[in-house]
Image (tube, rainbow, N blue to C red; front, top):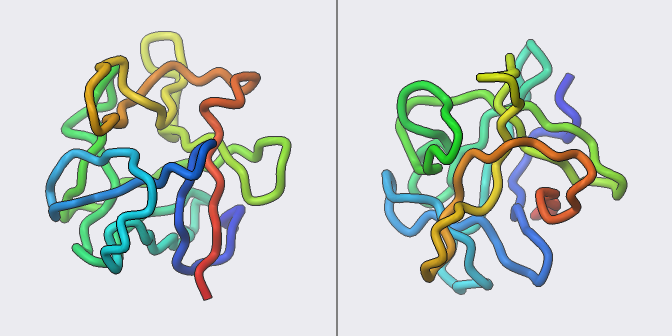
Length: 143
């Protein structure tokens, strides 16, 4: 069973930044609210294995990475679904979003900000640190 009910969510980081997909197969970025319907809304669907898929509401593409998971791999939209594990953080509806089946090259990989210091900030796979609150994502259910 998935840690959150199936539904449409905004996935936010501290300071009200939201995971955003501006084009169907574009790189995922972190932006304040854009006002564009669906760009920042994500359909979470639980899988039988306890993982989830994360699909953009506007573009109907899934949050994913290219090929095999690697350190610093950029996050993007794709027509191919990709499972994600949600590790509960300290607050309700707050999670580390993790590549299931790890570790990979000795570390578990989690959805986080890319090391590239450009605007808008890109998302990438980074080593999981469950004690780092900056890696936590809040799932806000849209009614």
